Amino acid sequence: MSDAAALMDRMYRRQRRIYNITRKYYLLGRDEAIGRLDPGPGDAVLEIGCGTGRNLIKAARVYSRARFYGLDVSREMLATAEAAIRRAGLKRRIAVAQGDATAFDPAPLFGREAFERVMICYALSMIPPWREALSRALDVVAPGGALHVVDFGGCAGLPAPFKAALRRWLAAFDVTPRDDLGETLKALADARGLASGAEDWRRGYAMLAVARRAA
Ligand SMILES: C[S@@+](CC[C@H](N)C(=O)[O-])C[C@H]1O[C@@H](n2cnc3c(N)ncnc32)[C@H](O)[C@@H]1O
Image 1 (tube, rainbow, N blue to C red):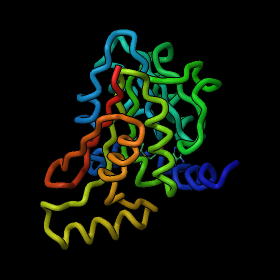
Image 2 (image 1 turned 60 degrees about the horizontal axis):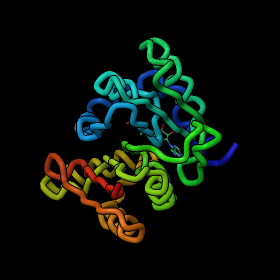
Image 3 (image 1 turned 45 degrees about the vertical axis):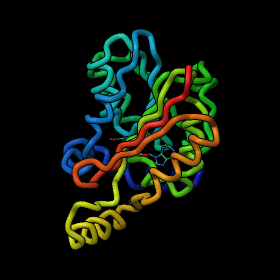
Image 4 (image 1 turned 120 degrees about the vertical axis):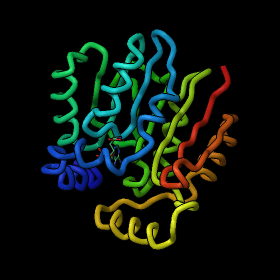
C-alpha cells in the first residue's frame, strides 16, 4: 500500500462514518460545482478523490443520463462510497475504483481513457503533490470536456482572524489550502492549450475553477 493510501485510510477509518454530516458545514461550494458540471446525455463524469461518494450520488441524481466514475486512494472511503451507491440504487450508473490521483491510468480501472467532465472537490488540499494530481486530471479531460475544481480559497473577503483560525484548524487535519491554485491551473491548462478561469466564491472561502478543452 502506498504512503498516501495508508495515511488516508488511517485518517478516515473512523471519520468516514460521520464524514457527510460533519463536512456539509465546511466543504462549501460542492453543490455549486455539481450544478456547473452540466454533462450531456451519455457523457462520462469522473470525480477524483471521491471520498464517500456524496458528490457522485448527488450528481447522478441531477444528471440522470450521464455515467459516473469515482477514484480515491483510500479503500476505507471507497467502502463507504460503495455501500452508499448501493443503498441509493445507483450501482449501474456509478463505478468507483482505488487509485492515486497523481498517477492513475483510467483505462484498466474504468475502461476508458478520457471523460467529458472531471471534478475534484476538496481533495487537492489533501494531496501533497497536488500539482501532479491537477496535471493528471487535465490529461484525462476529453475533447469538448471540462475539469471543475472546488477547494478552500484565499479568504480575501473574510476577516483575517477568521482566515487564521480556519487555517490552523485545517492544518490539524493535514489540509493545506492551495493559495496558488488558480495560477497553477492556468499555467497547466495554458501548456495544454485549454482555456481556464478561477473565481473566489463566498468572499473567498472557496475557489471554483474550471478548465475547458476545445472540441
Ligand atoms: C476532503 S475529502 C473530499 C471527498 C469528496 N470529494 C467530497 O467532496 O466529499 C478528500 C478525499 O481525497 C482522497 N485523497 C487524498 N489523497 C489522494 C490521492 N493521492 N489520490 C486520490 N485520492 C486522494 C481522500 O482519501 C479523501 O477521500
